[in-house]
Length: 100
Image (tube, rainbow, N blue to C red; front, side):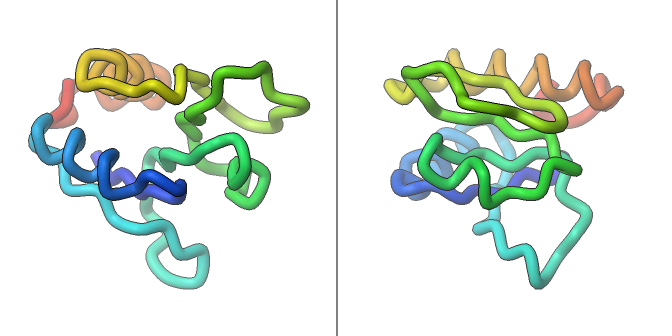
């Protein structure tokens, strides 16, 4: 499962992903395009193309959301991230991905 990160607390997200055996990369829309999931926060959410499934760290409802979005609280922990990734893998048909 290819996961990219674009949020203010990206280093915490990377550590949590590594604990799950996933190497997260920083999101750059100009480079690699084969990401399955982008983890972002509410402030940067709208800058991510809707072709990606986005896991959004937000304690408030999102204004609008085109494409596939999973919203989880900003007070993120390993369990929440794990279940968000499992849900994302099911949504994308990646049940056999390493994080599953």
